[in-house]
Length: 257
Length: 327
Image (cartoon, rainbow over all chains, first blue to last red; front, side, top):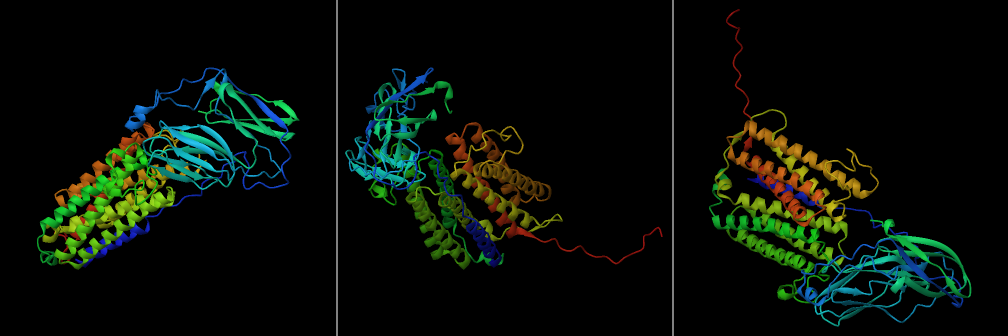
């Protein structure tokens, strides 16, 4: 019977020894936000304003209804839940991140005012936001159900926190620039959000009508507009003191899908 | 086989081992569901569940992805408990020392598996740990199968001796090679799954409309390796099954598990195709994982039985040379 013991042990040993996988490190994205801590001389005063509209041409896909039966709380509290990936109002595309993607050779103080993301009726509010490196991010759960907020960051360390109680608040931050940082709730698959993390404050998110605006110092810049479904567009501009206008147009036909 | 007879009958222990084996199959299926539904991180803490003790987490809070992840944790705990009982029972009642140590090895494996499960949550599903977790599950499954087999009445009474019927590769070697090939294929499958490469090649049976796809990413390489592995494993199983059907069909000890293994691999190929065609729909994808484990189990079972029953052919009797009569 020793023969059988030797056989089983040998087979098990082989299986155990081979029970290991391997893979490459995750790829570092080539997002235009730059990486690392801010460096360079003190930032010049932001005496210019860059504003514009993110126009949308074509027929926007109708928002899809979200099936929330996986969680009775969500199903009963969310009123007519629909997807937010393409939100068009007054011919403008909302939730587009507009930011300076060329190198900004200046150092900016880290804001102490936190950016907040809330979980309300099983949705992230806001759906898209921007922040600076090391700026506090407040994660709030306003729902009487469990959420986990999970950043699928590739440059920064991933963040995954469970929030079991209504009103619970967690604080975190990202110490490297990364664009974009997707967020997901692994409990509720439909919940998704995006953040842009930058070493400078020259960024904004388009609101109603596709309007955006942010202040910056005069100079020559490359400006990037990013949308979760329609990808990125870039433009060069020389920003002067006072008001500056820069518009982008996304077309329904240019969908990356 | 006379030594086995001294082991004595313990039908209860054998049945308990069989029950643990079946529960392990269910656990592998539920574990597959966790990955298929992408729920692995829906409970971000471990061993607690959102701060609760795992066993007191309220059922009303098993919502969304938590349902799958928490069910997997509880079922895994149950299998761990069964393994503890099995080990203690074996050490108390089993007279064969090597069977006792086999049970201890199963217990050590299930503990290691639990730790890997925790680590994969703590480190946010790193591919090496998640893949190792998936592969160790198969190892544990094989260990439990072997305990169920060695505690069976058939085994203890001594399997009927089967004389090697054919030349070439020995049947025991062929069975072991098939089991090894299936296990390697499961490793590649687990790697593919945890790299999210299940749809890296979106068409089937072709690959990007070609026989050989363009290898433009690691995911495509791993996915294609899994498809090639399927071809090799199927060939090995067909070879093994054909050999047994041709030469050992009157020996149910070998023929029955060979039939089961053959049927399972056909089902497995079908499920693999549906996994791609349905864009990784949850049920076919998860069934593909569980059927893969069962195919390994059937092959492992067959292999152990072959080692326990097949003996080398006796040398032919040599008669004195005689001149033919017509000379």
